Image 1 (tube, rainbow, N blue to C red):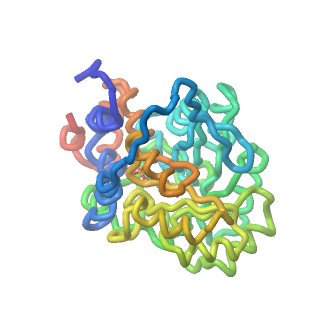
Image 2: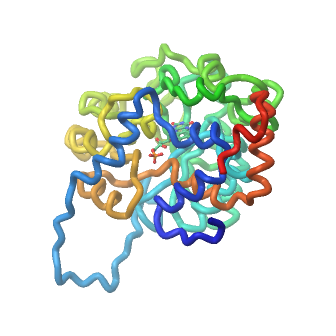
Length: 350
Ligand code: FNR
């Protein structure tokens, strides 16, 4: 219903999802293969109970904190780097950036953003000071990787989030079933893919063409260290062993993440993997977490297990979709179905 009250992220998910054409909604909302990990991510939080203390003065409670060695945020939350946000709203990542700046939280810029690093960053900084981190893949084209790093430095990004859980793209049945293509008119300026170049390309084939599945700690981390002074964080760590490697290779932090259940299915929920990573880090590097975080209590539980900050991916996308007018949504539905060569009415979710 239009005008529905948004009281929770669950409300946002329902309302946002309704606005999106089937194949776009499934692209955003689904996980890989059997959907085990995506569901586990949220479900796992409900296993844990909060042990409250009473008669504590909370009249001057302050949720603000410092991240990345001294930058202030209004509370320990950020919006994870998630690609192709212009499918949810024409303003895409620039709208997310404005919203993050307004609320005083940080934002990750995906390499698959539909806007350039400068556009995303300035959309936020025009509103208020904001921390941006640049999400990076290990790429076959090192020159391009370097150009992205330089652009991120110039624009004022604080850190690189190197996504380490994606040697290959996760097996997402929805993309194959729907023959998912990036809708006409969108581009990926950060990885220098113009509208013409991505036309009719599946996400899968596009990713394989550009990502380097030979990535490894020894080759990639010292190289990154040698080319930039930005902080280096590893995104996608789920074990004590890899946390220890991140310490050994001099990384600044890790994001305990399973890519929102979109990569290898069957890996643990991030809230369950968090304690062993925190123990292995032992205060030597910082530990953040994302995956299935949907309430303030989820954030509390993650902090109680030792995370310094939480990040959320899909909730921001649902937020974008909620603000989409029905007229634009219908137009998007037909543009997308034209791409797929199917009649519009089959694709648009009422
Ligand atoms: C992602 N994520 C992601 N991660 C990344 O490192 N690079 C990327 O380009 C993307 N793209 C992307 C697109 C979409 C549509 C989603 C939903 C997610 C993963 C993201 O950064 C984060 O790890 C998860 O989204 C966190 O889980 P929740 O909060 O979505 O459950």
